[in-house]
Length: 117
Image 1: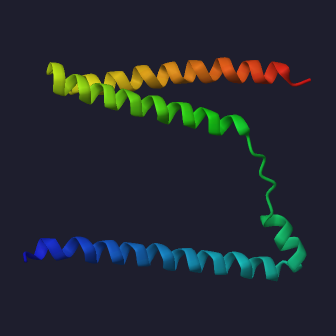
Image 2 (image 1 turned 90 degrees about the horizontal axis):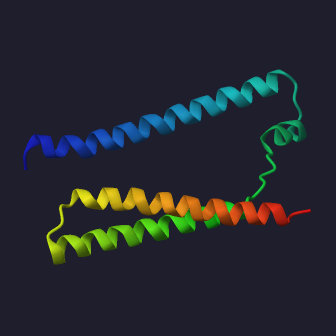
């Protein structure tokens, strides 16, 4: 085993540990400063509480995009194997299909938003 091969996992674990330690220190400083300012636990909880609004059309958008990107990759691989088309065409097909997917999503979303009173 060469020394370069052991350097990658060691660097990965050291970097992960460094990020985790910095996150812990930052969180501790933030909480300490909140306590020093005299905030109660309810006020601190209210600061961190976010009301997340879910957009149902976002799932539709990502579903259409991933579906058509997958179809484009499958079609590109099929064309490459069967007709010896250049592999670079796969990137073009993905861009084309994703663009078409965004247009389809725009049409669906605009119709749904116009239906809302």
